[in-house]
Image (cartoon, rainbow, N blue to C red):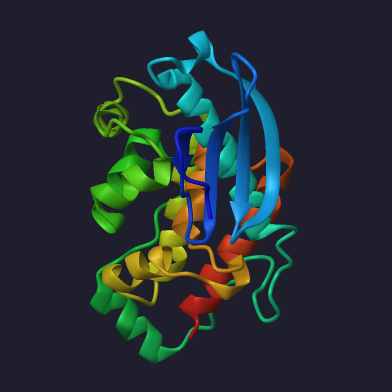
Length: 235
């Protein structure tokens, strides 16, 4: 639990049980950034305050603090993220069964041809249809949703991390929608998963988009997310 008082300059709760806060250290222009989980110290860093934060923290400081808290939280929640038993590492083709073919047709969904080669604007358009705008904005971890419109129109191109998440999300949608409705698919993204240590796929994908997960770890997360979606789709 974060302390209370005038010494607390800023606080932030990225996930239930996790809290980050900045406390004055007693030294001019200095403060301590602390991240805790249910009172257990996870991270502590000495930070410099612009103009001693006489009128409150600078927006650029808050942005950096929030990013640090998000990174510490995600690493603690996910850890090494071992793949749960029963979740395949690679997405495999579902067995052909007549009942599933009928269900597939009833959903009215068809796999997209080579998602890796689709224009970014087409990927955005597909996700807006399947996941709806609010969820896409959350996936991209952006504050101004007008950026989505720029990508959609082709006026701007997503950054590498955003494009990676866009294409991976559509790949996951494809795996789920083959046998499930759009409502079930959106619920899968938003529900907590034991194999993600209580996180939601939406949270993990947003962390990737923000850059909170290191590039070298991306293949592991891709396998786990696609494996979880594939396993769920075959139920």
